[in-house]
Length: 142
Image (cartoon, rainbow, N blue to C red):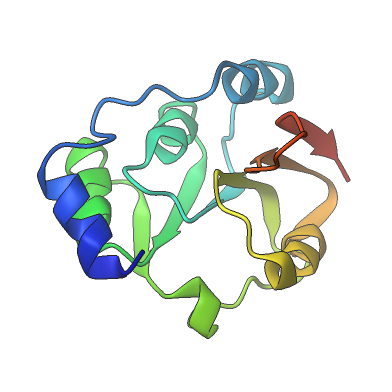
């Protein structure tokens, strides 16, 4: 689906009121507040996880290719830094050892998985809900 199609879906209000996944909220409760810690939300959509992270004090960067979705994120919490980028085209590079937490939800780009793993600092976290046919979403510590 192209960015224009996603923009239209978000304009119609799709995903505007989605709650963060319970397992991610539970993981954030275990990890603790984010004061001084950086989080990256990959393919953030309307920002349900970005908003949850920011409300817990994390410094959040939210990346998506939908301008409309990122406008929704900024409207919900102006503290969230948003980046418009086509991940499949390589328009955003995940910096190595730079993030205390990387969140990715319902987005699977195989060649991005290594960058996600390498982008997390030692002792950091990856929270992922990947669209796998037989898999379950989960949280893993590096």
